[in-house]
Amino acid sequence: MAAHRLPVPRRIPLLHRTFTTTPPRPVAKISLVGRLAADPELTPTSSGQDIIKYAIGTTSGPRDNRQTSWWKVTSFTPEGPLRDSFMALGKGSLLYVEGSCAMNKFQDREGNQQSAMSIIQRHIEVLDRRNSDGGSGSDEPES
Image (cartoon, rainbow, N blue to C red; front, top):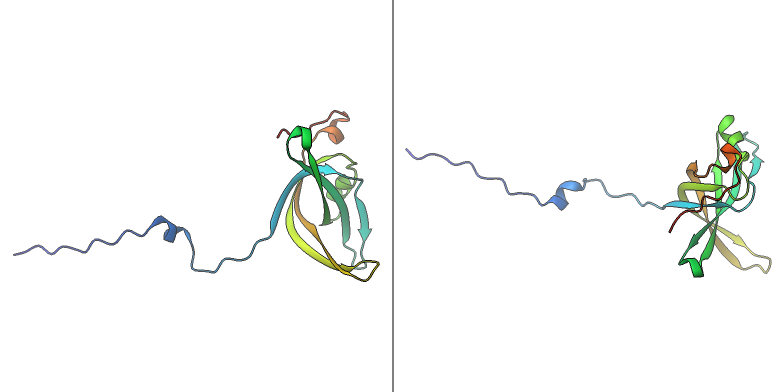
């Protein structure tokens, strides 16, 4: 009597095992480490939710030829201590900002259609200790 052999399943390549069957969603996520360009501006809305707008500068390139990029950031912050502590930050505070990109379209003074990218903040961390311990030393990130 012959023994029946079960078929050996084909090994599925690793690439096919890691993906799901749902289609991927488009992602426009950005993470920045930079310094506040000026004190944040608080704007109350008619719905009662506060909007904080600020700009941060990021630098790139070798030390002898650094270039600075400026990013406009909008934050829809909760009420209370988190908002108050954020508003206490001053120009030059080192921040880690994570958010999504948004394209804003507008007309300039000459009537030309323009667009500008801004960041909608989802997460923020203060990276320097200047505002918490009263010191004024610089904590420049190493590149």
